[in-house]
Length: 90
Image 1 (cartoon, rainbow, N blue to C red):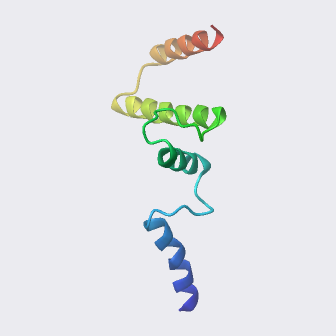
Image 2: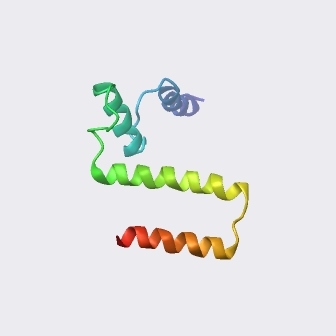
Image 3: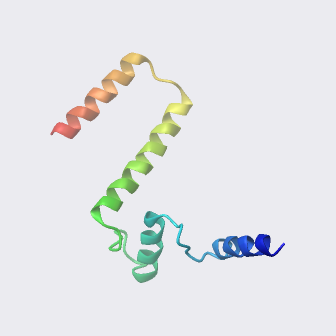
């Protein structure tokens, strides 16, 4: 019973909104940046790598939502990938 109570204490901290050791670094950087600079859009606590990863994550969710509405044809997917590659090479 004591072990269970000790494990639940860790979850209580998460429910209270406190950061834990297991909190992802993007979440930590976001929360700390919002506390320090609530008026800024760009988070100074996040490094360039963190911002890149966060952007890729958001784009992935957006693409997944778009794709779930209807599966594009193979031709459309090839055209989209070709356009993305061209954008990256520019």
